[in-house]
Length: 513
Image 1 (cartoon, rainbow, N blue to C red):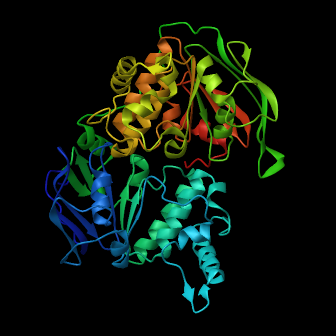
Image 2 (cartoon, helix red, strand yellow):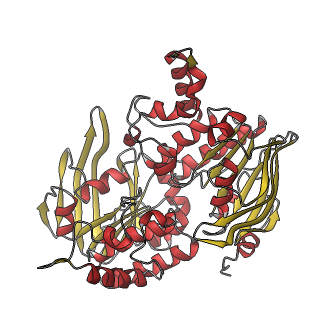
């Protein structure tokens, strides 16, 4: 319905439709009779919380999964897609939220995987490279097509996913969280590409938890909640409050810095840390950073992609070697401790890339939650399943994981609930300092509020919290102190009352007045 309660039809040609789509998994119904239209040359944005059914609907429209009942219509004719190749052959491509690249292959090989350019002599690698360069140039990125994907930053890998879909000349392009790992500059480039695609008549389905960002490109808005469409409207008739109200039933904010208690002694000391760029040892990706964090204090590290945020947190956690400097936890030098040793000492990291670094995909929800604490339940040669299950049950409640069972496969959860499992795994170790690298990546507005409220509650109990973000709004939530990084250095430090524009200016980000 539109903002004034009327159903909208729209004057634009409908090219793809889902009619009364139902999808069940065992005893769980993920989609409950959803109707959904995609218009030619327009952006239809699908809003909803984690677990609302957005990704399930898109998987059905792109041939990844089959509906339990209902029909798909393409250009007015009923169709059925056997798989993603079948859907792609009919002009529908999807860019998944979780990257589906082969890290051991080059950018070129990933872009042409399953669509190799073959001649009588074999694969024409030179022509593939030429075409890959053209598409990447369109995205305004200097990625070398011969670079192994494993050598790219997460944001660059996301651009490769987008380039692969663009090269397939899709007339319907589904983008599931395409900007989740992109910098502000890369997002701007993507939006220009979207405008160009619309001008060519390409239809786009866009899914994003970045609500304000999504409104910039949306023509039609559709909201899903618990597998049911709760609202749809023309973008010109809605605002942010309308989206949130139909998503979660009320407005959420990310909280405020917790007050009413004194900070404790310094828990984490980062002293003149330098980290060399592995691709260019003459350059430091982190260049002389010093930072103290007290028990009970929440510190936000803000910066654009490439500012050194991730490298700094990974070095503190023991995943990256220091070129110079020291890291101390409650006065103890951590230089000789492994990652596991630092966890046992009381330092835990929630990594940016949950799929690669935070989860074991072959394990259950419970197995992932207890993984970092499993040594606590070992009694001689045996593992106390009772104690482990108690920790798992508490973890699911503490971080509000939405799952049918702790025995469910981790892959059965939505992206946001998987992220909460990663956070819950670290919280279960009872850390003294917790580091979180982009903790809200892939998390909806309600889940963000839950995560930040959880961190605020633990800070009141004495936990030192350090989280990094590239979203200014997240800086202005629960942080007592905001540290801005730029080109590997701390460029500014602010209290919680700072203006958004001051944070952006300190990071080197252009401020639109």
